[in-house]
Length: 273
Image 1 (cartoon, rainbow, N blue to C red):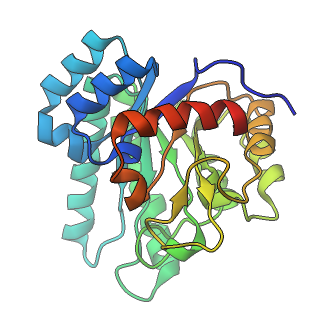
Image 2: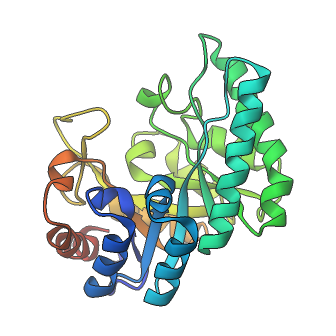
C-alpha cells in the first residue's frame, strides 16, 4: 500500500487541539507548516466571524471544512424551522471563511420515531440545498457510528448517506468519510466506490481497544485497529484527492500542549495514513 510522502493534504481539525482558540490553532498550523485547517463554529463564534476569516486568510491557510450544520430533527414545526435557520447561518459562515464544505451531523430523533427523524433529515437537506448552492457551499453528510444514533445522528451508514446524496447533484450534496464512524461496516468498500465523485472530506483518527470512552475515546493514528491506509486508498480510487483531516476527540490529547500534538499528528500521518 502506498504511503504519503508529504503533508500537503494534512488538515488540523480544530477539535484535535480543543484547548486552543482559533487564533492559537491558526498560529500552531503556521508554525508546524500544516497547510489546512478545519474550523468549528463555536471556535469561530468565540473569535468573531470576520476576524476568524481574516486570521485564516492572512496566515495563508486553506479551510478544508466547517463543522457543523445538521441537527435537523425537532419535536415540532417551529423547532425544525429554527434548525433550518441555524443551518443557513452555518452556510453563510462557511462561505465567509472560504470553506467549500459544510459538514452535516444530521441529528438524533426528538422521540422514539427514528424513521420519522430520518425523514426530517432528508427534508431538511432538501430545504437547505438551494440556499447552500447560492453561496457556493456543498453539504457533506457525515454518517456517524451507530452508537451515536440516539444522541447525535440517525444517519449511521455510508449507504444511507449515499442514498440521500444521490437525490442531488454532486456539487450540491456529497458525503464525508470519517474512519472512526465507518471502519466497521462490512459494506464499506462498495459504498466508498459508490460515492465516486461525491466524497467531500476524509477524516482520520483510530479506534482504541479497549475503547476508553464513547465520545472522547478516539486515538491518534496507529494506536488502534483501523485499516487507515486501505481506506485512504479506497477513497482516492473513488476520486477524492482533497485534504485529510485529523479529527480526534480525546481528553488526554486535549490536555497535552498543542504543539506537541501537532508534531505527533504529522509523524503519525506519514507513518500510518
